[in-house]
Amino acid sequence: MPHDDAAAPTDPASVGAALASWLEDLGLAEQLTAAGLPTYVRDGDAVSWRDPLSGEPLPDDRLLELDAMLRSVGDDPAHGVPVELVRLRREGRLRAALLDGGWLDYAGVAARRGVSENAARFAVHKAAERRALLLVPHEGRVLVPTFQLDDAGEVRAELLTVLEPLLAARVDPWRVWTWLTSPAALLSGDVPHEVARDPEEQPVVQRAAVALAERSRPTR
Image: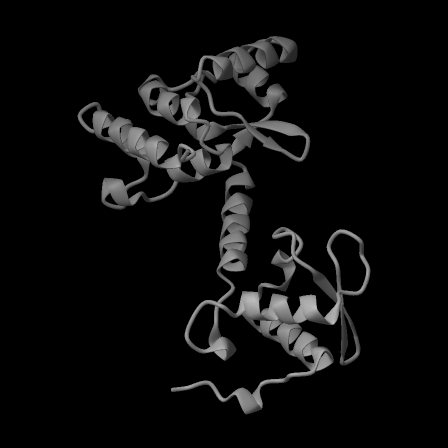
């Protein structure tokens, strides 16, 4: 069904208000900052859009461009989907789930290994340099995801050949963490780090990791 252009707002103030309401209805307004896009402030029914760098009011032409860009996916602009914002929301939810008790800091690793915190810090960074341990930077801290550790705080032996290709390819640490702890299509929906516990299935996980690493390498 063709979009009724007559029903769409055309003046910048109405466009800005309609765009803000649309993003709020989709639950995506909070993703604007993470995407480096202009943000807005509500004052009653009025909406003021701001440039992400200068903080100055967004010029009308840029506001109209922003509206067109966010609605560019789909045949009907009224029901387009801002894919980048949807992706950022999904990543934010996944990260929140991963951060919910699924990691140790240096002190936590030290306690599990029965060594000093300084010794643990040195050891985990040496292991990361050998591509034998996944470290994830977050808000000025270094997180050690626990899925890869055994009860003694050492890296599970069956994961060494799985981690190596991913770390060698410099795949984003958050993506590595997510992939290894989530159902994977290449493994028929099974979770990679869990499947790797089976000696017969571990090579399958290793090949899947290599495939992911190859897809993640930057193209020249």
